[in-house]
Amino acid sequence: MPERPSPPDAVTTLTVDVAVVGGGPAGLTAAALLGEGGLRVALIDEADRPGGQFYKRRAEPMADAFGDFRPRGTALIERARAAGVRCLPHTLVWGATDAGTSLLTGDVRTGAAGRVTARATIVATGAFERAVPFPGWLLPGVVTPGFALHLATMDRTAVGRRVVVAGTGPFLLPVAHALLDVGVRIEALLELNHPYRPRLAALGAAGHPARLTEAAGYLLSLAVRGVRVRQGRRVLAAYGDDRVRAVDIGPADPARAGEGVQRVEVDALCVGFGFRPSTELLRLLGCRTGVDPATGEELPVVDQDGATSVDGVYAAGECAGIAGVHAAEVRGELAARAVLRRFGREAPGGARLAAARRRARALDRFAALTRRLYPVPPSLTTSLADDTTVCRCEGVTAGEIRRAAATGWNDLHATKGATRAGMGPCQGRECGHVVAALARRTPGAPAAFSARAPLKPLPVRTVLALDEAGTHAGAEPGEAADG
Image (cartoon, rainbow, N blue to C red; front, side, top):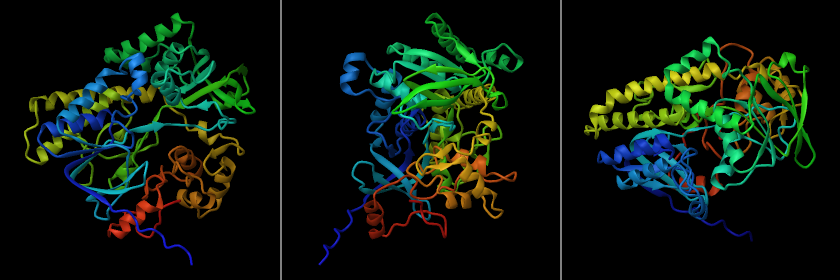
């Protein structure tokens, strides 16, 4: 006789005034201010400790040896804890009840199910790096700049000995600087665009002296150490056997891809094209979104304080649009002050509201300037060769996506179903924007896959426990969650 399955675990429930999802700069700032205002706050994050990507914590042995990494983050974490914020580490928010009043959680280590009910929710889920496929991008040793930066700063480990750093965005500068600090030889630093060439579009940076000084400091430091930014260049292809061994470098314009190609020997390649906002939870909760014409990303429609179209739900930080750590913190402050007003509480330092709004507007203007200086042209994706793998989880090529989309009745989601592109463990976070670009046949077509529960893979036992407790995830009517 087959063994009877064990009953699902009990569901851990928590009721608070405010749930803050995401423990990065925006979430920490919001949680600390809310706690200081006397509200019961839960700070929910998948990592083992708060801090997010920017304020990551070094392991104790590394901190003892090399010191605290970004002490401002340590102070912000301590401030939140001193304010009575309840931190829930190792906790994934993967869905919500049909009414959207409770967040469904799972322990990323054990799969234990949970439910957090709150009168207001601040979503501060941050962003992830934008990848653009190219021939050879699946080789071992091809990584994102963020991963290379993590190794260099957290573990003091070099991603390789001879490295090319490429893509677009100001983030490439601190990455290159950190790699040099751990002994890497940077064979080339490639910028897709021409942001550091004197021209009219760059003059707007003069209105943001702090950011301009920061960028100039990196450029000067790199130049002193023998590294210059090669603008208007990109990686065309990578080659290797058990790992990447060489890359081809050429003009950024796909129409000139065969001109002046240079092959460079490497043992690691860092390629990234900026960041994409993590809006899945906001969209699952039903928040209205719009497509950013500059990036093609779906962004939540919010007011000046981060309030979304769903009553009681706020967006803070990079999930509301990529703007950097300073903007993330001020957005977290504005969302928290809005929630405090909602509950009739006096926000500490309430006179700062107008100043915070002015600072947010200034930082938003700088973010808009950054998008103009570091665009990711659609041709990078639409010109992909048919045999280039786009969805690495399911092994789907650009040609398969094009052929599926060309069958007259197929839209983005039908293309996804026909090819399984975006149905792997990353749930389309890495390839979704590329699939959307390749499948788009008409203006106004969806820019992203629909958000469905579970937002990330989780053990079946987590769902079984919630079903036993009578909780239903907020998937779209008539749609099952992807595997």
